[in-house]
Length: 359
Image (tube, rainbow, N blue to C red; front, side, top):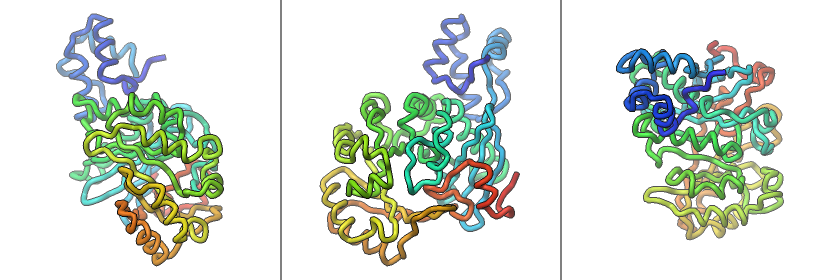
């Protein structure tokens, strides 16, 4: 079976060229064609016939197929359902801001973390995504914008906050970051990539040595052990105090930051006591807090606090001088908001307005 071209970092491609006596210019030509120009068809320019024949024979240049597109009627958020070669499916979200976009990438089919506030957790883990399937989400979303919203194909931020625990699929996510960061490829800046984790310590141990400069976001959600155990079962194996200790040891580069994500759930973790406990935990750290009003999904047992409760929670955190942002909800009408992704076909059919779905 042919290897996917999109599994290769630039250094991998250089090694392929060297080992097979191909022109040393081949890696730059191919990366420029497929990543800067984002062309799908094989490059035939500035590459010899023998080199072209070699890549035709040994490499696959196909990308994940767009199965369905969902567009929010409220805020122009776009959610893609991608079909993979083994017929598994994953979701990816384009989040608009000022005629630009952030892209929320998935790293696994489903997720093993089983977080109670997250729709994806109900799927369980099916498998990890390969690097080419992660890269393919970005390239196909860009091409969709170029075709359907010409002039808007500016994806400036990448967040690994879709389906799956990114650090549970560390190697593929790491390789994808190398490709995104490559000056020969998409040239995304390190400060423009954020990887979210529920606190998977084996991945955190590798972080500072292997993905330096990329931003980290921790799904914190409660400073209290019993509450966090309910929200994130992984907390029972890797307690929050131990997770934060590892994060504190990560040497931060200039303009690099750690974001602590906090889902606000009515009557569960939205009190002044919760806010004070959180503030005391993070005071003095290089921390940013994202407050995320809970986004309901079919069958969820939680609800969202009212606006006053959210503002009151933020007001308490402000007394600790921690930069705090209330994240606006986008795409919730097509189940594209934080915690709402689920590529189970039957659930989608029951939950979405058919008028919002574009096959």
